[in-house]
Image 1 (cartoon, one colour):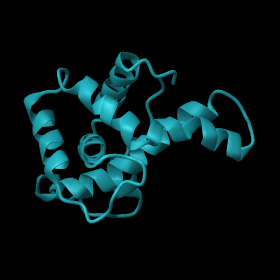
Image 2 (cartoon, one colour; image 1 turned 120 degrees about the horizontal axis):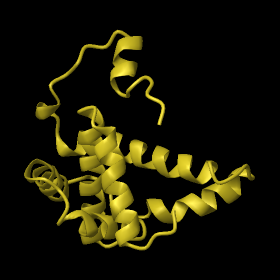
Image 3 (cartoon, rainbow, N blue to C red; image 1 turned 90 degrees about the horizontal axis):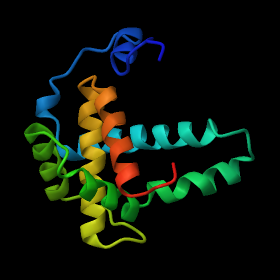
Length: 146
């Protein structure tokens, strides 16, 4: 794989942003960015399968972004994460969001939030390889055809 600009450092450098101490961020802040990173990964995979109409791309990717699917991935990863990562998952799961899932139980929604928090934390820490490693493991363990 070709190495290029590493996100988020490339973004910070390009826009002259100051680097924040991510240890002070709330788990919902991690989940906020993690949701986007997760979606970008899913959409990249789907688009790389071939050029199609946007509604077909959306239909293929939508199932992977559901809280129920993310909950399954969360559960699959529990035995694979480090102590530090488990702490982020716990904090993300226990965070009290002011929004509700449309088609998921509260438990599924909280576990999905925890997964997004872990992805966001690792992304902001510059550890995208770990994000991809964990997600690939989770997809395979859950037998998701991605």
